[in-house]
Length: 118
Image (cartoon, rainbow, N blue to C red):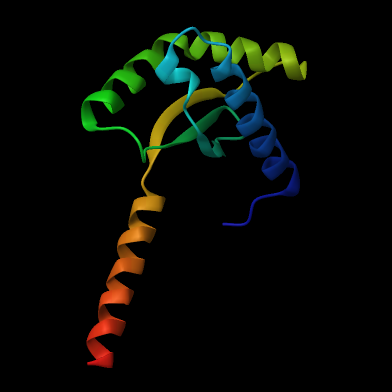
């Protein structure tokens, strides 16, 4: 699906602002989160915010998602104030699994290449 330049720009701005807003929180774990991607949907009324999951176990991931739901309103207000928008998308936080899938694929190709060289 092709996205318009305007939508891609909005997603880029949101990725930067959400990262900045997370650093203002008092929670050490939430402060250190890395936003990898933002995907706007439904005409910018919803935004899936993807987070890097490399350093967290399942228990920490559950903690992070639970607390992000609690501070979602703060993050949305922070975005509105910084950008001066009339409306902010509703944020939905998820962990980015693309990086793990890519690593597994690369490991498989390396294994195949090793087997072929034998």
